[in-house]
Amino acid sequence: MRQSPIVRTADDLGDVLRGWRRVGLSVSLVPTMGALHAGHLDLVRRAMQLADRTCVTLFVNPTQFGPNEDFSVYPRDEHADATKLSDLGAHILYAPPTEEMYPTHSVTRVSVPQLGDLLEGEFRPGFFTGVATVVTKLLLQSLPDVAVFGEKDYQQLQVIRRMVADLFIPVRIESALTVRETDGLALSSRNAYLTAAERQVAPRLNAALRQVAAAGDAAEAERIAAQMCVELRAAGFARIDYLTVRDAETLQPWAGPSRPGRVLVAAWLGRTRLIDNVAMG
Amino acid sequence: MRQSPIVRTADDLGDVLRGWRRVGLSVSLVPTMGALHAGHLDLVRRAMQLADRTCVTLFVNPTQFGPNEDFSVYPRDEHADATKLSDLGAHILYAPPTEEMYPTHSVTRVSVPQLGDLLEGEFRPGFFTGVATVVTKLLLQSLPDVAVFGEKDYQQLQVIRRMVADLFIPVRIESALTVRETDGLALSSRNAYLTAAERQVAPRLNAALRQVAAAGDAAEAERIAAQMCVELRAAGFARIDYLTVRDAETLQPWAGPSRPGRVLVAAWLGRTRLIDNVAMG
Image (cartoon, rainbow over all chains, first blue to last red; front, side):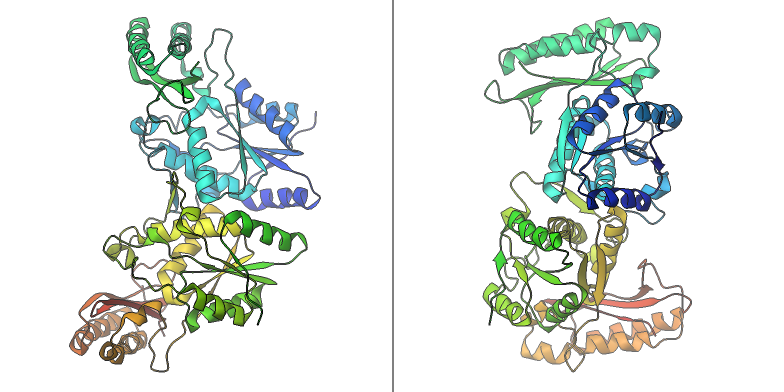
């Protein structure tokens, strides 16, 4: 099995990618924080269909973690990740050290007010500024034709679409459907934190979303969502940060069936925070 | 005389510039807010030496003006600007309407904390976020090989260098020396606001900077700077926002002759705020 080469610096990455572009090969990018699961591999497969060459980045971005969040314990296993990506045939891996992405005097931040301040942004202040900043850097280091993000992080996808449009970053953003366990639990690197008992309860989150998604109008959706919060807490969820129906583009409150809607949830199971979302209808 | 073509949209600009790049022509960019004077034309000449094709942008950027600043009255004369640039032989002018640069739902901001918060940033909150945001947009719309900025706006130049490095924007930043009237006054579009009497006093600003720049060490520089503030006020300057010697790269207080230093001033003459700067030594 051929190993996918790993580069560590933006210069080395640029050299390889410029070489490809020079001979007319298109490039797709899949930014990840590593700890790859089948959901990530699905993004990579999609990226490989969309361009001649695919670059996967592995970088646990410190600026998107809050001071009391799980940056230090976030799962890291570059060797396992590299093996999975080599097996898939990803053409290059970019795993920069932190000082490559954030050199000593680096201070510039990209923020997406409004869209980035609600939902996740309310509970994780600064999160989307961290995401927007690192994604801007990765996109401008690699200048891919297309970059692929998962619907699992739905608000992140919308923030990135907005940022790319607003700043005129010359890249096409594509999304891929959330990959789930057979019982409905969305794949997430943070599922590794769940105890066996919590793992049994976790699929209730997606079941609740699907019940809300079946509602015929905004009022019914709100009613079911409130009921689902009660049921999730009864099932063992410690806290529901939000369970809400939003406009699928603006993430403002859903106006009803004339607009595409999205049900989004964030909830704590023990010490693990899980997020998920599904389309209305 | 051939007129330089004017484009209004990022798409049209991209089409022209991609066409040039495709046939191997390099591109330089000169971002301006119009109201062109000999200083701007010097930047354009320099840009034309640095690349095969030169694009000059004319855009009065609303997000870099504070609520009580001069956005509405800032001098605008596109016809005169276009004539000057055509005479020079600039290859294309980009004069987008506000809604092209900031469409309705656009919210993304680029900020450069620290470097952008001191000096001008202290007196014009949000100014450098406005500058960094619009320059990022212009650079990513045009993807030039090189972009040219004047030393007249010295802190802006340093903020843009920092931002380009931090975000990995694929462009080289070049600077050009400040162009001055024979009496030392730095050319500025805002000089048009000066009354005849104020115009007589204005060159004192540069004279004061040159006296500070001749100092042999940091203590002497501070002493002369304090004295110059007194003299400028006596000469008719209403308020000195700052007159200070800083490290030429970090804009932190100057450590002395072991480091390159820069003397920077902002001061009010009647209702006009003037800025200037010179190198120490």
